[in-house]
Image 1: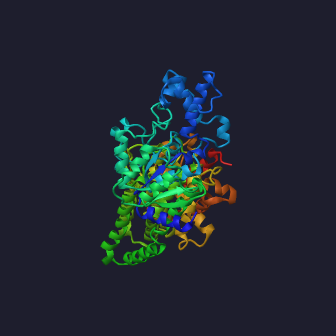
Image 2 (image 1 turned 90 degrees about the vertical axis):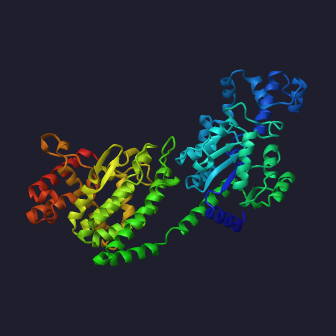
Length: 588
């Protein structure tokens, strides 16, 4: 495969996001051990010939013509072999659905090409796929990345389908679906497309560029005719070829002035294309320098009141940009049938990519800012925490909708603790409000990381399968680079992180009398890293805070800024209740 051609294609697709459709033939599914339509037809004929005692016939189509007086049709063949829909469907399933052994061997499963295409759909790069295949491998791969595609597999499905412009992904199955006996397999059946399908294809071929893979161009006469009658050419057509195109395919290539890309196989091509497109997306993200410039401006605005409006605009413009981004397809709440580590990590990475500049702004602002600027940080974080309405969807994705807000509370709260601004820390927990359906809660209750994901889902995160606080640890690693100028190293950063979380738990207990255990000896609180790291690395942050309170008493800094109502006994009590709760977690 010529890397220059691949890069050129990637650039065209990147800068014309959503403008290229895929035309997928049997070559992609053949790699998954799915038979082609022609192979299925031949097997149906062979089985029928066997039933009639003519199993040794070589020209099965001629045998059928001589036997029944007509050319073989797919639905007629199935009707001979099974009279009821259930019988016919059961006859077809083995061609497309894997046995347990085939699953173990990786057969009849989405290939690397299917997975790469699904990832391109998930990022909004590909919105339309046309396929001659009957199988559902594409649908499965796309559903696995959290998107339910609109599938048009028959003419009567065209009218009721979501318009292409409003659908995250539309799959047009030209020859039908394997569970629909109207599917087309034979040469006669492939001569013409149904009228409504034909009109839809004409529009797609006119309005979209095309990447053709795994289709020979020889047998689907109706599809070939559709390509021949395209009048305009808005975008380039690309034809992927493992070997020299046939005479018919060459004629189409010349007619459409298509660019031929020689490939070794579909898996290698689509994985490479995905990689190039991800690299382009990374390259075109706001450069780190832009974040540095934003922070430089921020530091200037923080110091003087005359910059009050500029400060507000700098912060809220970034917030507005993020909120707009969260309304786009990559952040859809529609999810797959099952959650995978890939889906979970991708969604979190998408969130981090969008908010990383705001994280830097919040860290800097909450560390260096003045008290009259506190409400700005509350307002910014609250808008992000509520940027995606809680309107339902895949439960894990809807739970993650508040994660950007939670990470910003962590970023701002840790900075406030690091600078001794405990009043700001308390304000973020108590004043940031989060809407969940008809309920409104504080960040203190709604944005603790322990409560955002269930344990099983959180342990799908890479490298977190055996951890006690997997999402917390994941965020711990994400935020670390943002605190390199505030902390003096790994140990100092860990101490700050765990101090912030332990103080959060103490305040949680202080506001939740009903969560106390028997005999008032412990109280439930959202546990963080401190609950297990202290056991492993020494006395931990809990004992450190206990010693501070005992040593400083009423002079303990958080009390001077109204934490625990300024009451040292309340602080001692909350520290004790949280400390005593840790053993009940049974973490080893």
